[in-house]
Image 1 (cartoon, rainbow, N blue to C red):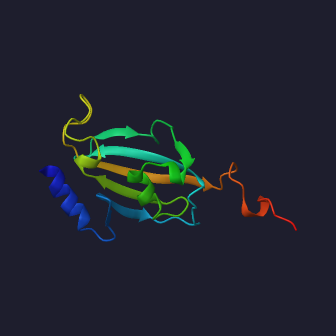
Image 2: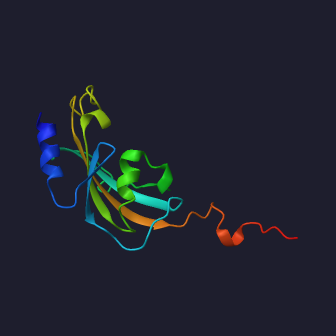
Image 3: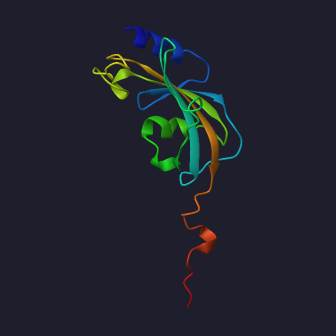
Length: 139
């Protein structure tokens, strides 16, 4: 019940979008477009709606890096709203987060989760062939 109330209050804020059952609000848009094949490094702070921090990658000096297209949809779609070095808050209802079971001792059953995600850096994926280096057919 508290989770639904939190979601409604978050949804009423300026700039909040709802897509695929996940709410997101751009906190800082960043600068410089990001492509689906770009390597994107993020830090994520995972919290309960009461502010209890579950994981804080920045505090633990950890990052998550992969191509934008490989992030789970819960993060990928909101991240598409950002440019390089942008930040976003994502609110995930229980059915899209940990469900009715939660994580014993860590996340209560039915918890709505709040994620603050910041793009540390995004750069072209060096493993992807660029258009300039693609083979050219000759005749």
